[in-house]
Amino acid sequence: MNSVTIGQYIPGSSWLHKLDPRIKILLTILWIILIFIVPNIYAMLGLLGLYLVLFFTTRLPFIKIVKGIKPILFLLTFTFILQIIYTKSGSLLYTFNFHFGLYHLLIILALVGIYIFTNKYIPFKYLYLILIFIACFAIQLIDFHQFMWGNYKLDVFEGGLIQGSFIFLRIVLMVGITSLLTFSTMSIDINNGLQSILSPLALIKIPVGTFAMMFSLTLRFIPLLFDETNKIMKAQASRGVDFNEGSLKEKITQIISLLIPMFVISFNKADDLANAMETRGYIVGAKRSRYDELKLKTRDYIAIGFSALLFAGVILLNVLL
Image (cartoon, rainbow, N blue to C red; front, side, top):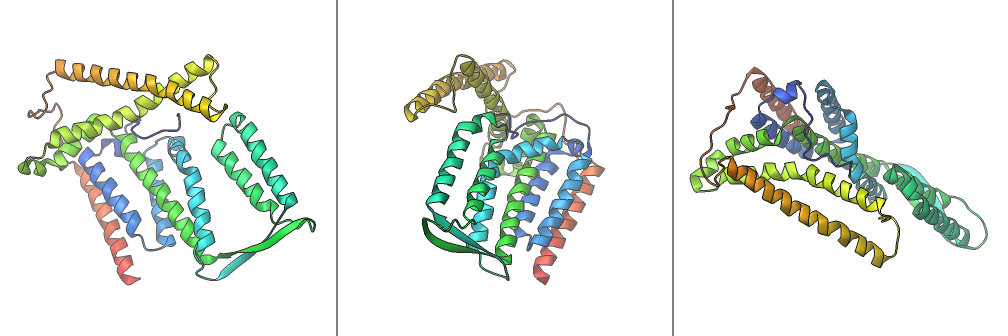
């Protein structure tokens, strides 16, 4: 639960914190578009390098980005392996000759058993799972000569390695860029920025203010609900509940015992929030004033110009290639 970083705001005084929220939202969308139109792995690496430079100049904790990537680490690894297996373009880099037999099966089952009984003691479970997978993969390279059931091979092509790395970096950059928005922008500023950007839709009777408020409250409640879930899990663990062990029936009972208080807490939080907004004079659909009016400054124009040049460069690169 502690690895969830979506919706978290980290106070700071960097140039990114000082940017207009409208500009940050628009530039986040622009960078996501850039990620999808980058033509090759070299341009993607350049975009990654540029992102790292921008990130470190904000003085945000790097561990937060790492925690944001942790929940999708298994998906990233699985996608990378699939690309290597099924992409057969480019030059052949290496051929793995695999063997499979009784000894291989017994060792793999033993490794799986070790993982099942020891993963709860390992702090980095995703990394531990990947290491077990690599061990199962490496075992099949050994030829035991006895009780063999068959042989097969895996060809690793240059195209598969490049394509796997390309998709891996694309997903990592998407997580990193969207995290920068929430790390450096308070939920109320996101609300005001969205409402300002979508204000033309009010001409066709779309409730822009309500939509922006719902979005900002959703972002605010994500880390809050995960924190509450973490507290409930710790409280139940102190009473002897172990979410990592037990039969299927026991796990279902444990999940239900977690979901019921979570629903109760969610409704109570929503009710308290509604009462607080009502006492402060919030009326759905009514025109609202702001204490701080959004105004573009020099740094905002610099960010727009830099991103526009970058976007134009990527478009030109696509045309030339």
